[in-house]
Length: 105
Image 1 (tube, rainbow, N blue to C red):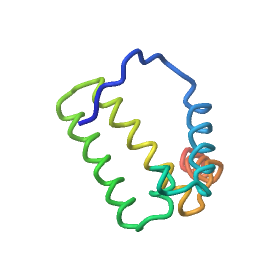
Image 2: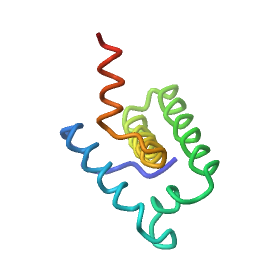
Image 3: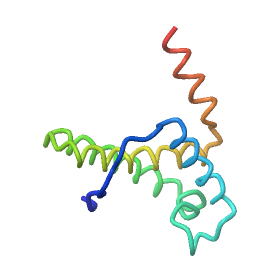
């Protein structure tokens, strides 16, 4: 389990995810030696996919503990790693939004 994030305030999820996706996209050309995100984007596929599974499990375990702050913390890790997966496989936020919108109809 990671450290709890201090002083968390509500934010705008759309702007936050868009900004995070932009940062992740910018790491495509970064040095893997200097950037964790660049390592995930250019490294072994299984390493990234295992990380996504790990973070998913951590969200589940935090939920089982009914620990609000821990759920939020692990969900942040999960969303970050999911966005890295989307970037690695060329799926844009607009495509994801289209998929989710199509399911609501």
